Amino acid sequence: MNIKRVGNVILAVKDLDKSVDFYNKIIGLPIKQQRRTWVDLGSHGTILSLHPTSLTSNIGASIDNGIAIGFIVGDIKSAINELKTQGVKVYRDIINREAGKNALILDPDDYILSLFEPSFADKEQQTTGYQGFTPQ
Image (cartoon, rainbow, N blue to C red; front, top):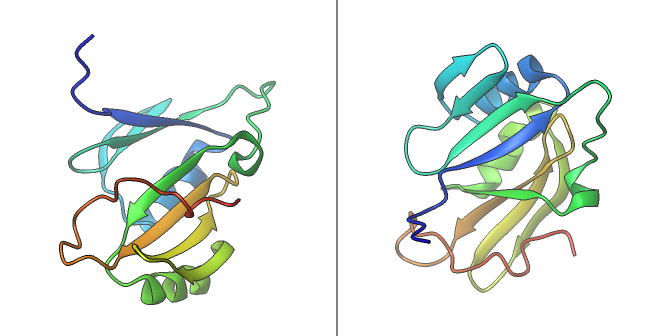
């Protein structure tokens, strides 16, 4: 096997339109491609793909199933303040770690989104791990 990188993260959502609005209008991910039952968001790197879950399926919340999506932000304090004004639920407010600042928010399906402002010089760099940046 020769895996090059993660291509996309796929989330099953209860209300596709509501989730697209959240990730596009509130979080700011551009819509790359949209079909009736599948929406790809992002402009480069890993794509976030949303599709509706079956009405009979129980997807659970990421708090219960361990799913979390991490985003790197430039200024976490202003990001959290902006998200709060838009009614986004903050699961855990900003904490300071050696690698940077982190906060956790919830999307419309209660998937955890980890917002991370790195403390290292290259602010675009992905961390080598999110240890300490999850709910536990």
